[in-house]
Amino acid sequence: MSMYLVIRCPGCRTFTYVDSFQRWKLCHVCGEAIDVNRVPVYLDVNDHRDAETVVNQLQAYLQQAGKRDLSAEELEKLRIDYANWVRSRL
Image (tube, rainbow, N blue to C red; front, side):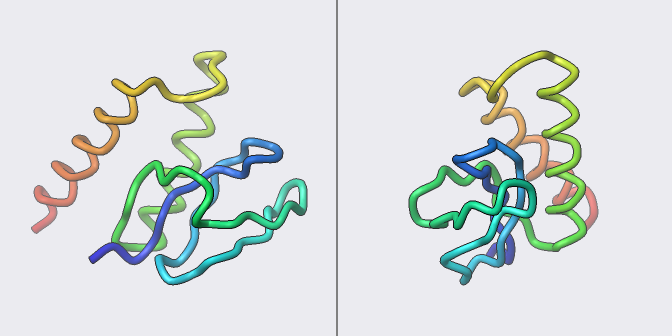
């Protein structure tokens, strides 16, 4: 079972993460109250350190690529790559 969900603020589009049982999150950038049930989950991760790393990498990737969001293909690749990485650590 995943412990953390990587999500994105609908207001300022900043990536963040929440505990999988958390229903609301206050955005640390714009202050918007994020309803976790109403935003897409980019990735389920097992550890807060993994979540922090993914958040930073996603933000940097979009900024470097000059994109506003991940494509469906990029999102699927992210999920596959993370699953493979977790399996390789076992």
